[in-house]
Length: 239
Image 1 (cartoon, rainbow, N blue to C red):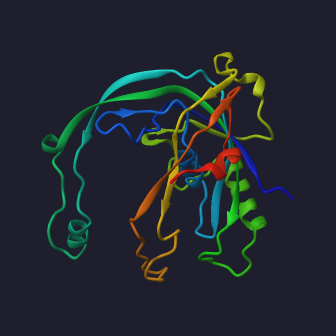
Image 2 (cartoon, rainbow, N blue to C red):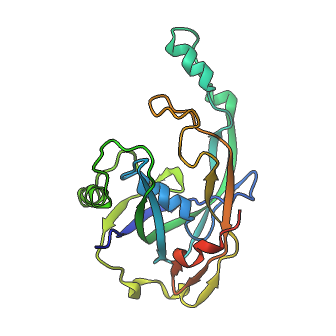
Image 3 (cartoon, rainbow, N blue to C red):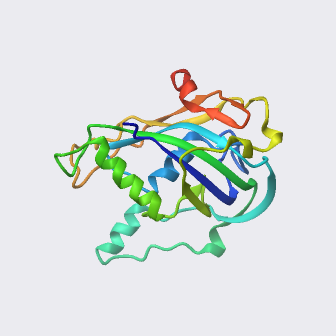
């Protein structure tokens, strides 16, 4: 039995930030694999499973829009939050003092197809009867019911997904004609590989501490007639 899924994802805007851009946010032409994994994890995720994206299909023409946004350039330190929880201090940031205006090049009117499956990790499990079928049925039910435990987004949290639909197959005839042919997308960020591999470094799942050490992974995909066959490039990932 196959435990894979196919979903259609749509949104008004998307931002898959190029890491080489240090100041202004500039999006890749197409989604990164890690962004699609994060979107799926917003629907259902457990330490016992690993989301694996197999294909990404771009349906709408690639259109960019330039916007200027106000961002907060600092964040509240964790120690300040913990101090307030103990009844001391008042962690806060004054937006008028920490505001920074930045330009961003976003994608607009996006529509993607994502084919994925999951694998068991062997990490923490809430039940002894851990199986692929159990997680498959939970994911299937949540996708059918439109459930999620946090709002799925397209790269950046402020660009929410407007629709996620579970489908039996993709209608590739709906791919825009501008995407036909073999398009070299260049080197793209595939994801981030954490040193702890998802396991607490203190071996305590009740009060876990994870490592912040991580290495970026890159790959060089080609989009053929709107389809990025991620599984084809998985062995060629560069750290």
